[in-house]
Every structure is written in C-alpha cells, then in structure tokens.
Image (cartoon, rainbow, N blue to C red; front, side):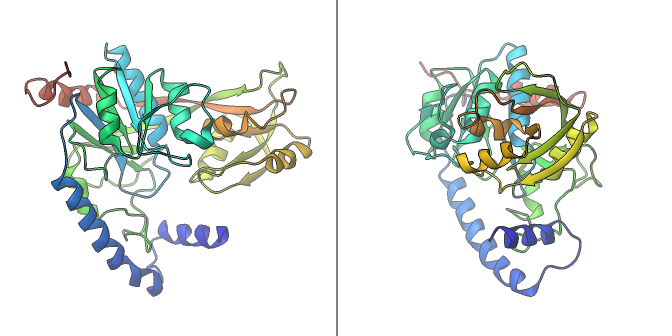
Amino acid sequence: MKSLSQWVENIWWQQATPPIWLRAFEPIYAQISRRQLERRASRSSHPALPLISVGNITAGGSGKTPFVIWLAGQLREAGHTPVILCRGDSGKSSSEPIQVLLDADPTQVGDEALLLAQQSGCTVISARDRIKASKVATGYGDIIILDDGFQYRHLARVCDIVLVPSEGLGNGHQIPAGPLREPVSALARANLIVRTGPESSEPLTETKEWKWRAEPAGLHDAMRTGQIKPDTIFAATGIARPYRFFEDLESTGLELSGTRTYPDHYRFTASDVATLISSDQPVAVTQKDAVKLRRLWPEDAPLWVLSQHGAGETGLFEAILGHLKKSSTTDRYHKAP
C-alpha cells in the first residue's frame, strides 16, 4: 500500500495526464468536497477573537507547521498573545478541546500539535471541533491562528492565508487524480497566497504572491548526550516530500550515508528505533519526527535533529497585520467578557 500511495503521489506532481481510472474518481471527490465546503460556509460562526487561518489547497507538504510557528513568533514580537488551534492529526483527537502540554504524548495529541506547543511558545488547543476550541481560546490570548484552516469554513476569519509549495499545483487535477483539495478557482477567496520553499514556479494569480521558506539552521542533539556533531549522517523521516529534508541536510555541508523514508505522520515503534540504531551511524530526523522518537530513543544515543528558521519576504508580516487592523475597526471580533 505504501508503494501504491507513493506511485500515485508521483503522478500528482508530474505534468503528464493521470491514468483514466484516477480521473474517473475525480468528479466524485470534487462534488462531495464542494457540497461539504458549501455546508460548512453556510453554518460558519464568528469567534470572539480575530482569527488568522493558515491552510493549503494541495495535499500535504506545504510547510504549514513551520509557517505557523514563524507567524506566532512574529505576532508575539508585535505584542500579541496568539493561541493556536489544530485538529491533532495522527493523535487520538477528540471533539472536546485539549490544551497541549509540552510533555504530552504525541500519540494522544498529534505530532504537529506537540511540535507547535514546544516550538511556538503559545497556548495550543487541539480538537476536531475547532468551534469549541475557539471559545476556549478566549481565556488564553487575543488572537487565534487556525492551523490547516482553509477548508475548515465553520469559523469566520479576518485573514485567509494559503500556502502553495514551490512545486506549484502539480498536474492541476483534484484528488485522487491530482494533489488539489479544491479547484484552482478556490484561491480567489484567499487574502494572501504564500509560496513556500527555495524557489517557486510561475505566479498562480495576478495578485501579489508572497515568498516564505523554512531555512535549515543546523543540527542539535535531542538527547543531549554531549557527543560532537558528525560530518556524515544517516537521514530518516516520516514527512511529506522527504527529499526536501535530505536536500536541507546537504545544504548545511553534511554528507548523507543513506536515507530511510516512512509515511507522513508515521507512528514510530521500538522496532523502528532498534533498526535505525543498529546501523551504528549517526541518525538525523526532522523536528516533527523527533517529538515522536524521543520517548523511544535510548538516552545514551544521540538523536540529531535539523532545526529550521522561518524567513518571510519583506512586507509579508505587515500585510498580515493590515488585515488584523481592518478587523479592529468592526465590532464583529471582540474580546469575550
């Protein structure tokens, strides 16, 4: 099944026409998706706090988690107290809001939710029902960041940010024939389109498209063993588009002795850890992998993690603030008493 999913995803990002059996299911998905989104929009509610949505139009790998961490940091520097809402993918998500603690079990709250809590310095609330979560958020801050929110139209927002990877929109087809969650025309409802990655293809719209990327910032040992940083590393990861991680490692001057990939949101086991350590090679993983592996990793073995630093095009954050300032002139968004 893993090889089949990889084969399909490779088709998504090629310019060739996808097989007819995938295209046959595309209109079915498109119709179901459109009805769901319309129903969500018709029932949308206005949260008590201004809300910024960060989402995408393609499946996986657009850099939402590092972008949310960057945005939260920018908002904090500007004097705000953001609260992050997420769905808790890969965890045992509940409809009831759960505040994600720094030492939470990622199998319970989700790997991305735990990474957001550990890296953002903000309150993170995880729940399938993010309307309930938005009500809880009023007690923790003055602004909400909704992670993966472009299709979550249950909540009104003051700024809708859509991230598009440097690869663009793939073959232009919707799931399962292509990577699109919605048709390209859906980009019209976005306030800001942000191209993520080292380089971008041609602009998708006639409006301003901003650039942002997560730049590699060196290795650190999650286990704090005190060992010297290696020059050669074995790279292992369970993320979408793992080749980006491998390229980032090499861009820092590291030599890769080998690589191993797992499915996105993969739940590592003790057996996986034993296999990685048995090679007697230093192992490097992403920050998202590390939040799951630390509980399983031997304390006396280094677990090298590639840190990242978000970098946005000049004016991007000011454009986001501009939408917040517009919202402050209305009574629709206010702090709950």
